[in-house]
Length: 151
Image (cartoon, rainbow, N blue to C red; front, side, top):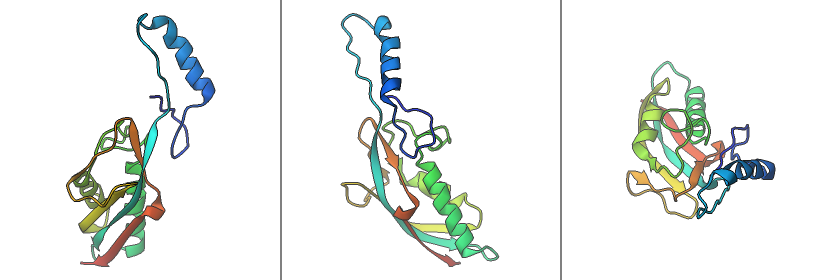
C-alpha cells in the first residue's frame, strides 16, 4: 500500500508513482512473488460527538475550534496518529486516545459522552473501533459535534 506524502486530505498515489514503484520492485522480487501495489482505502468517520467542560477564563468558541482542529489533525493519514507521524495502516481507533487528545487541548477541563461513528457501522459501544486491514480513517470538521459549557 502506497501512501504518498502530499497536501491532500486523503492522499492517493498517481498512476505514474505506482508504475515507478512497480518498476523498481519488479527486478528485486522473488520469482514466485506477485506484486500488488495500490493506494490506501479510507474509512470515513461520519460523526464524533461529546460534551466538553471548558475552564473559566477561556473562550468557549476558541477552545471548541481547537478541539475540532486537534481531532481532524489526529485522524490525518500523514500527520496524525498518537505520535503525529501518520496513522498506522489498519490501526484501530481507541476512544481513550481521543479523550487524551481532547483533555490535552488548552482550556478543556473535562470531556465526556464521547461517541464515534464509522461509515457503515453503528456508534461505538466499546472502547475500540476496528478499522479494516489496509484502511485509514478520515475525518472532516463538519463531522464533529461537541456541546461545550463552562464547568
